[in-house]
Amino acid sequence: MIDIARAEELPDAVAAADHALHHKLCTREELMAELDKVPVGARGRARAALVVDFAEPGAMSVGESLSRVQMFRLNVPRPQLQVPIEDDDGLVGICDFWWKRERVVGEFDGLKKYQVDEGMAAEEVTQVLWREKKREDRIRATDRRMARWVWAEATRPQLMVARLAAQGVRPTARNEWFDAA
Image 1: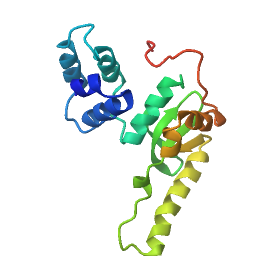
Image 2: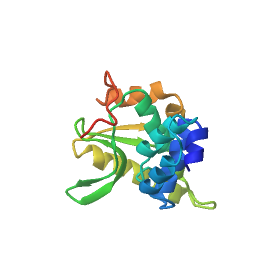
Image 3: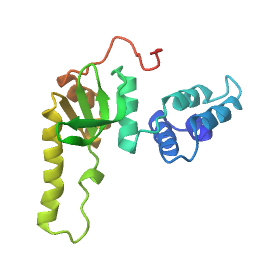
Image 4: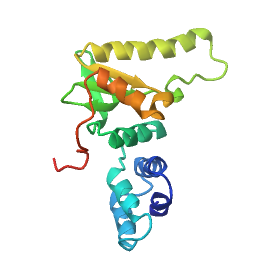
């Protein structure tokens, strides 16, 4: 994993590390131990150190990993990942991103969320879309705002940031992702 982090671009390296942590293929401590074997000043070590600090087991897709890298690069406040949202009827769902101060839910919408099985009847396809619409309605009814984006925005970060800013999550003057809490 550290070799990947040293050699690949940040989005690819973060996606690989997120995947490894999410699927328990390694721990952050194991990544740190491998990083410690790389001499300070070695090519790619600084990027690998950033990847180890940046990686999150809560990231559930490459699109979520890419979105976080873009947020980081543009000084968008760091979100919490995979936060349960509840209403009076119980659990509404788990959101991809949550900005508590701004009360904004962020959702990366990859095609998998709307995937239907081959041979599904039109009525079943409609139900997949309807359930997601009702989920969003319930989230918004909890006095939260919601920003959604797809691959086209995640790969053009200014578009994704504009969607977030429209809901109140704005870039800061300096990056605060690794400030002490």
